[in-house]
Image (tube, rainbow, N blue to C red; front, top):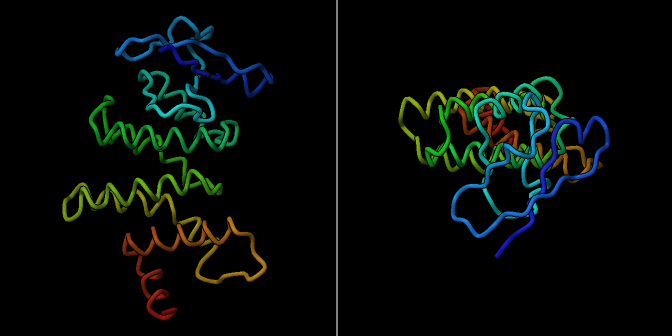
Length: 198
């Protein structure tokens, strides 16, 4: 069975170009996109808008280019694709499927300290819970907690525990994510506020 795979690159967002398509064959081997990239110095996102259930791994240069784009202007990449990148890099790292495993994953996710869209934050939260269970009580777990706390602290400081009854549903979800993550990383002001709140 062949399936159609969509991909976009940086020119798609900056020049409003059409989504590119490529057919993947019956091979059990990973698909390689080297022949479809006009500019090897531009990033690419495969499985645009997550139309298929698959993990996407990139070569080191493409991961670095995606990292740079996320750091410099993360909103240039669609929110669905930002969540996909986070989910892919964290899952590939936990399965030891990418070079530099967690170093790469933590590097890619570091842009999240600027993120205010719900979906990438929810993706981080889901993966954090799994990784926290996996690394609980280890030195790596303590480092992970510290990293995740840095990523979510801006959300916690923005939303705090104060709920606006007229607020949007997504604000409620982001507040819930921020409070849960920051309190679970034992950020003292959050833990104290949680004790007072409940």
